[in-house]
Amino acid sequence: MTTVLYPGSFDPIHNGHIEIIEVASRLFDEVVVAAVRNPQKGEPLFTLEERQGLIADSTAHLGNVRITMFSSLVVDLARDVGADFIVKGLRVVSDFESELMMAQMNKRVSGVDTLFIPSGSSHSYLASKLIREIARYHGDISSMVPPGVAKLLADKYGAGPEGTGEGGGEP
Image (tube, rainbow, N blue to C red; front, side, top):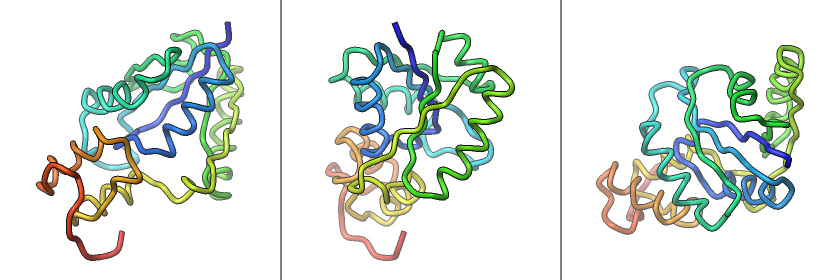
């Protein structure tokens, strides 16, 4: 049985993340999706518990996905969950540059290899930071995130039940 770990902040999870999880779930026996509190990304919008719930709701259609949270090194979590590989999604070239360095460090520290899964072009522009910004100004993010995420974003920003609305500004 091959287990992979897909770590990320997922603040919030979006359709690009879902795409990577779906691909990994087709390729591997078990996918462990792990939400992390990443201090380098500032204060999160959603708590770890909220993110764990959103991930669970968004991946309920996949029978081989397990969700967890962590606040340690990714390589320690990989060992704890018995991951054979770490999986990372790539949107653009700059993602590869930063993720490659991390993959090499993780390999050196733990021996765990990282596999990269490119996102489809229909999701390559998605970033949680930009989605939060659009939602903050009541822009329509319904095509970018699962319905439960759109609703919770609307609740957080007071945009109404649909998670969409009139909005201005750029992301």
